[in-house]
Length: 234
Image (cartoon, rainbow, N blue to C red; front, side, top):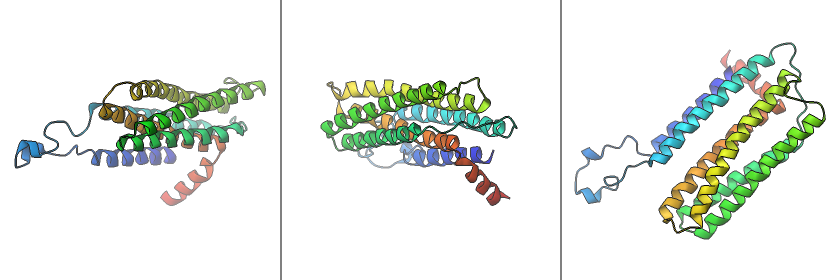
């Protein structure tokens, strides 16, 4: 349970930092001076879309935390036999990192008003995301060809569950990416394009963080981490 608690604590810390940057505690009714001189009087400090995405990411974090908790509890049973880690997962991890970096590039370009940079970053991020999903499906086919199915063992079932749920979140992100990319090529105002790109980048960074944790579990690195955490808390 220790890794799950630490994961939730990390997510809570990131959420608290993000909320602290959004001026949610601002009290415009206590400000003095002309209304026009106060930058937050006309519009809310945080767009509703950002708040909605933050709530969704919190719920998704809890979902993955429950899966990870079940993973650790089931792993202690005697019939647990972990499957080998396909080398292609390393390549897929690198591709997802590139996808997240491309969305960050697009976000920086959007803040600077550079629409060409936004389009380039979006196209690269989307291409890498599709490549990541293709690589994950290839891993599934390879494992199935070697006799590792979802019903073969509990370890195999958790592998397909964790990678499948994460893949579904990536697929949902691609839908949002497609809408953002369409806006970048349309006549939408730059402010709306900027917000859409920021939301996409925020979601992609979350997907990368979750995948790194899932990959660490599947690769067996979490065992040493659990031992260290238990020693620190003992």
